[in-house]
Image 1 (tube, rainbow over the protein chains, first blue to last red):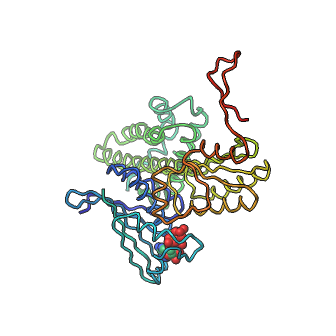
Image 2 (cartoon, chains in turn orange, brown):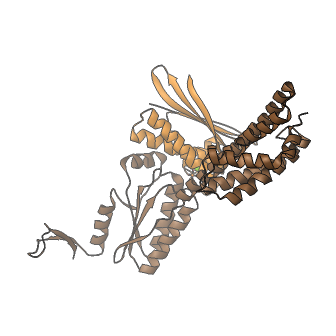
Image 3 (tube, rainbow over the protein chains, first blue to last red):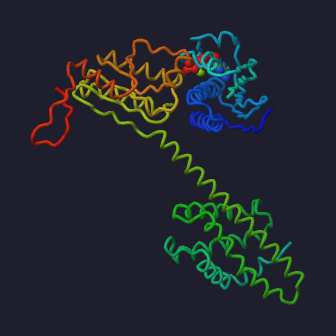
Length: 133
Length: 292
Ligand SMILES: Nc1ncnc2c1ncn2[C@@H]1O[C@H](COP(=O)(O)OP(=O)(O)OP(=O)(O)O)[C@@H](O)[C@H]1O
Ligand SMILES: [Mg+2]
């Protein structure tokens, strides 16, 4: 169940900083511990930068979600970029097509509780992550 | 179509006088703008406004383009002069009163026309005031985002801690082009000061992700090629855990929790030691740290 949803554009590297601050504020609101905050904000940073750099820009939707008594934050990163041909490859540690470290996608998967990625060539990529309190 | 613009035109100078009086009563800030400028702006606006009203009653139409442009200029200069948003909007709103009284005098004999002309002119002025507020807000937002950008770009100084030891205390986000600049300045400072050790302190960096890590590793590698060792300090526990989960390995990088620990290590590496000396007779200090 979503209690609140808001969408933010990711078009410049400043937007990456901004969505990070927005997610940080949401984690504080849910009283995440400092470690949980740092992990989720770092995952946000990786996924937002992928949206910008590999997806050519897009949006992040933030939802405050509830599952029974559990509260959490669900983020959807979506772009209309080139898509990912081989998701498994993209998720393997150290794989990069752009001279990065190739750790962003695989690493952010470990920093969240739920991770879901869909991509279609020529259509774009959507990554949905959730972290529960 | 309404005809109040004819009334405005016929009574232009009286309206101008009434308007300026109205502005000095409600908003005119003698401290921020002088009478001559204000009068010039007011008569220019009145001219544009009556011209536009002859052609259209829709502020979004082509006829009002120059009026809109003029108001955007007004909003910009007012904000620069220190007026508030509502004071800026009052420039337009305070024109209502003198225009209404001119219309009232002109349509004394015809109450129904009087009402519709007042309605039409009031509506137009309200819409123009809204436009002015909108431009003022847009300008404000642009200013704020520019300031935010500037804050991100704040330069980070390279400080010399001791002969042969440099420190680079990083503060803020490391996303932008600034990282490149900061790293380059560290490398050139290493050459200039002929330092053997550089301490990069990331206490002030809120998020360390793969991009930041990559920049750090590149810098450390480049420094090493130049014969200097880099220590990384200020890695908070939460960041340390996150880095591990990301899969970033900082092997070969000397890391310390605190800048002071890294400094102590650097001194040790250079064969120096911090000793506590006994308080001297002349100095009331309880003990002084001195580098031997
Ligand atoms: N939104 C996206 N659209 C298209 N391709 C993507 C997207 N996200 C990731 N990829 C692909 O997956 C690869 C791996 O992504 P990952 O974030 O792990 O590494 P990276 O971005 O290359 O480097 P870094 O370690 O700095 O994040 C990318 O190099 C890119 O080819
Ligand atoms: Mg990445």
